[in-house]
Image (cartoon, rainbow, N blue to C red; front, side, top):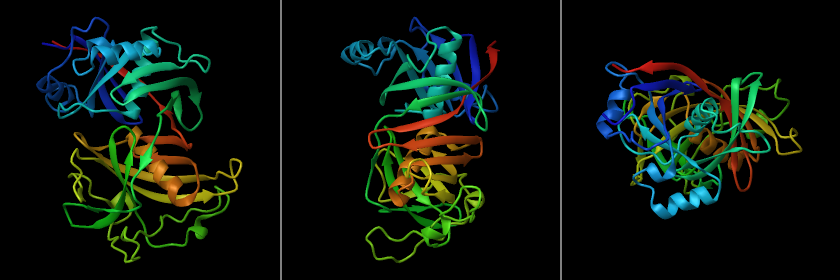
Length: 333
């Protein structure tokens, strides 16, 4: 057995994990063991498995990479694996849970002055503990998710396997691949402008074919009505697969936050290697970046089935703010 007898069940806004601390590097799990731990019927259950360890104890991290992580102050690595046993480059909710465990183990205080530098397969991420934040939770962290990149607007066809409903999605790179589709009836974006408390349409804006023809192919239902039990099909197919996000704009105020605007949105996600999850940190950031490009609004409060998070889109990085909870310590027999 290559996992410890005692592990922790944890979640970040409902995105749940089995996580454990492995300072000496003796517990690198096999894909079969990950699938067992993440199994909701025969194991503990989770969207993934996280091992907090040193960079040099991760088999797919080279000696040179490990030295570079240490040189930049990242002495600990989030070794994250999807529920199906596959390796994942990054997990935004997982980083907050990992930071919570690191604080429990007294590896960091994650203060504003000294954020927790966490090495991942997508580079170093910096996390700050904010404590209790009204509307977000009791153990909130802000993470600097680093740079973001977008593909051409709505160049990918996204199809739900069940009923064949379709919409056009935009590729977003947050260290792992995403396709973000805006869901809703065609509306004038100006109809969504106004004070945050005063406008809530229940719809996003229309989407059209990426070539600019303006022909609508959006046959997707509203976000709560989407069937995400099966992996959405993306055309053209992405070689490494993708997380698929579906978002509805609920309100915007372009006069807020020094003119950068503030918006509210609702999102659901089907994650590569895990299926539908209650929250996806990198997916929230990818969604925020796509919405910022479309609307000019850079600050978003996004509701997912597992809770509410803040996404702030800057030119060189995205900041994600949300809760993390260590639920229970589990002793395996």
